[in-house]
Length: 536
Image 1: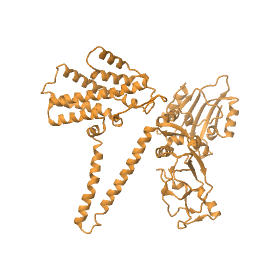
Image 2: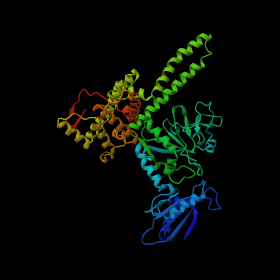
Image 3: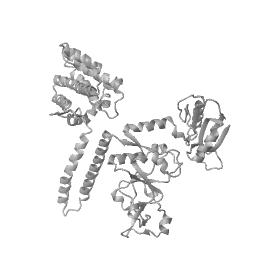
Image 4: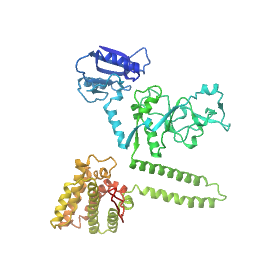
């Protein structure tokens, strides 16, 4: 049996819809559900409908196939072919549909995105930011009773000139860019009790959602700042107030996430209005320590750039404010000098050499500086040797980091055993190849696959994980061996050899940019806490 009905009946979690599906499930198994717009001619062309294919209930439940006809389909034939492939599938996902081998119970609405493997994977990926919490665990939800009509009836409306007047934030005031529009001629002002007003740190969300918007956008969300106050929300705005004070990176990340299409998708079937229930259960990412620090630094950088922009604008606008042209010229040149130097210094950060010299750990930075100096001086033999020394120093330093960090995780790599045996046998110390073996083993070690996302070893393991970096490492290793065994490059070929070797070294250093975030710390004293069994 096939049934054509409004999709809301099949996707809603409301009791009446769940009861209907339960009654159907007592006698029928659902084989296939196809969602699409415009199938019911009595309804608006954009209202989604569902064609549900049912079969008399059997002892074992069949797999459920779900398909969604895209609203915009440049190639109808491709959609039909994908549907045909879905009918033949026993599992997995196609372009527009998927197979559920274990169908959900009838009490759960069969919203297409709710069980979509791609969406479920993205939901799990949110934990990669640090942690995931339900929005209801972080905020309380309020919906003010202040409609325009209610304010007029209660004679609460006033004007912006009234000292007790409070600006009303309406749905139209919340922009897609996460800002609250400044007051305009259409802004309403009212007398509102202080305990019903907005506070700094509140999030405001439009209740109205455009259900047919393609492509979809997220919730229209903005954070209330001190500059927006005093203000109150209208009845078409949902107010989220933090249960506990949130850090700036927390609030920023939540606001950004709510404005994404993924947030709207995870909230369930897209209704005409935002419901408290959907928001309360919505999973939102929480930043870990590393991401929090990065967001803090980015925010500080943004504010600093804004101050510099304002300072530059002030200098530019002052050109014709001085009494004489000579004084104006001198002011612009003198005041702009610091700004120009800041820009030049910031631009240098895009230069790899400058970044290595100033941001990398000293053992690597020192060798790199020496290499650049040797190349600049034109001493070909010394420059070539410095390139190879720097490559070995880089691999040695990163390998030492791997050894220290794996030791802290109580993990012993096979390459460490080989180095230990070499030292115990009285042979020469570890060299280029030994350090490369440590890094290659770390890149492929299964023991390190379950490390926390923010663990520094995850970045370090990527150094030789890319084919271009490993190729560069092998080339430099061969050059190092040739140099050590007196198979030196002919002086005529040295200029070309320097160019190629330095390009390989640069490729390795670019892959090692994570070192800029791992500064060396000199520990001068360590004390052991016997009770806590830890050092500090």
